[in-house]
Length: 170
Image: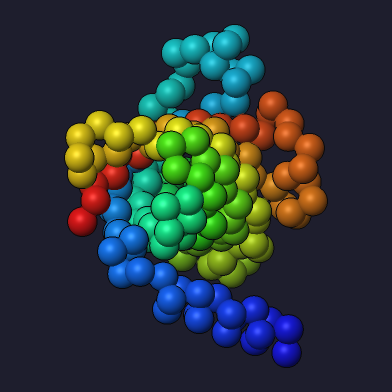
């Protein structure tokens, strides 16, 4: 019942938002799966195996509030497995130029032994979404993943990674 009331409230809020404030953005990016310690100690080692591709869609609801859906592609496998994975992710983003985001994601592969979809993981992100041209933005961020939402309240340097996305406003 409570979730229904919240969902109805959100739907009414979005319906009341001015249509001119809503915009869509699509983007492509790279995620570097190296921690700050790895980058400091071994800056150039194995970078090509630790890069993943990102496809991103953002819906700007109101200027400080966005909804983002990403699809991350692991061509070299996740965790050194060599099996190709994709990871759908969804975020609520608060902020404009400087922002914070919270989200959830899964890891999917049709070659996994025990089911195709992993358990849910939780994500926290801080970043800068910088305008490059009138319709082009450059988003650079640090991200942490955890198995439970509570683990995100205590950031660990060995779980933080970095990414960049170039977005085009439609």
